[in-house]
Length: 485
Image (cartoon, rainbow, N blue to C red; front, side, top):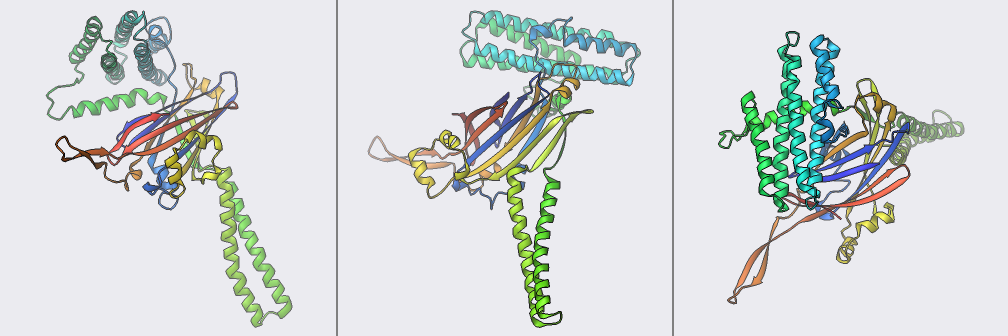
């Protein structure tokens, strides 16, 4: 199964999060994602102005394990995973801080706070989606109660490692997790308040409960010397923002997978190129032999034949290479990325990009594109440029099971696509429009000129196929919104 989430990452970047969930009873799972990108012709993005290197320069991919799934109420229990694994690593470290136990201790801290982050996000989304539910107040109470239990249980572990055998450096790992956990609680409580305010579901008791949780965490951070947001910061909390980014990378580092990228089909390509060279050589040799046999070695016809055959040999070689390269482009991908964690080879990912003519696009995709009548008429003269971006993924179930002590369902491929190259030739974002005024005068109002880039995505796994359409709305000022159609 493939899960997808398309959203705005920043002013000029789209984030596409693809979740590849491998089946637990299948040795290997194969997935395919085909994305057709329909680009207005006026943006001057085509195979001449926008090469493969430009596309991959605009594309950034982060591959990581899917965070193990636990409910907040499960995490709050000290006798169940993941807290039991965390507590065990603390006890082992305090007894004998060997290199293996130190690595396990740091690993479980990182995994624990990452699991809490994922569970907290899912719980808040569930609450915001069920504000009209009779259990709404109960859900809020359970959320805050479980958060307090999780934070308290984690902080109590400090007493286990507060022993002479544990160095200050190792104690710092605990403090990093503590600070990150406190930041998580504060930030997600604010997000819940914002979400409930937007839906007019924020009652005074709920608001007071959440603010008490926030204030308690802020006070705790001040007590421990952790930085907090300052309203009148001279540097606009620059150091805090930098530290938040470092903590996030530190905490989620265990989820990121090792990748090794290389060109796909290198050996086959060399074989085809050798065949092209051989065919051109056969032609040149055949011409030389035939003229030599007929006119002799030191004659003008033989000399001319050698020159002409040499000229044509290079052309034949280049034409044959172009033909084989075109055939290879259909069968092979641009890059192959081998994915691993430690010594476990989890699988691989392949990707390719090519401009494709409309007649090669499946009719089902064109139907989903669903151009309006005026756009279809315009498309006859100024055809949309279409990029096909293909991704093929294979995951090994046994390696996924072996790479972590926690249940792992698969991997996430988080793709960020920068659209800066697409906005270079856009018109001014504001257009003057004229309307009659109240007193017979003409009034000028500003209209907003937008461009639309359509994404049609096909997800294939286990002989199942699903299509989704997204539309990126943007102008020279950047991305305004992403619509799911």
